[in-house]
Length: 259
Ligand code: NAD
Image 1 (cartoon, rainbow, N blue to C red):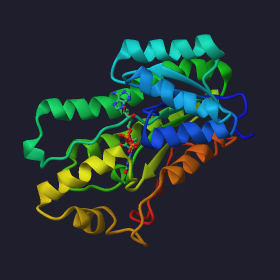
Image 2: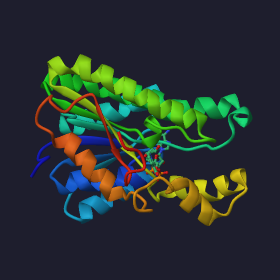
Image 3: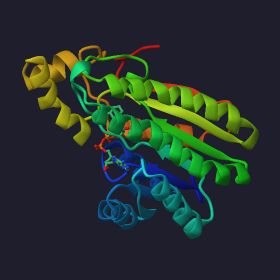
């Protein structure tokens, strides 16, 4: 299979997009490491992957905690002796007009998305460099390319991940390590379900209008992107055999954003 014998750490994989990526990787032969805040939730996802015939391991990891990230990657190395793929996916959303954001909210969001990407990548790269191969994948967003009201720190963080991936692509090339960013449109995960009533309130419109007139307005067909759509792109980036595909960001959004 495409990812046979490879070990993939996926952060935020107890839920939503990360979970679908972990399932997809396991279905293609990888050991899927479910790294998430809560060990029970991570283990529950790992147990379901194993019940379906895949290989998986749960790890407790707050991606903003340097020691926890290093310990999680060390535990994976102790168990399997390799890390081939990192998907830095853990994320949250907070919506307010910019002037209503507290500094604490700003820092919390930036820490999970940006510090988390840095810390997890830094912990994995030495092992990838030693092996002479690896694939680093960041979960960006259409908001890596496009702005929306109410999402100042999210848009800032998601744009920043493209810059970080480009640096890793340049530094990693000599070691066979690639770095790419997936940029999904709206996907109906808990992160988005929470935003629908919040945006309805902030914008003074109905929840139905948030879906139709805000989230899916610019798509070509009024459809949500699915977790499986995103997992397919992750599989492409993870399994690509050469440095030809590196430093890229791929938008999967039903045409919301075209580049
Ligand atoms: P989700 O809420 O379903 O899952 C997020 C996961 O991240 C949860 O399991 C949560 O426990 C975990 N997490 C949160 N903080 C963490 C931390 N500090 N350390 C470790 N894990 C942590 O959300 P989702 O929609 O699957 O989002 C996953 C990623 O996809 C995020 O980066 C998000 O920005 C991005 N994204 C989502 C959409 C969408 O429409 N859902 C679109 C584009 C990009």
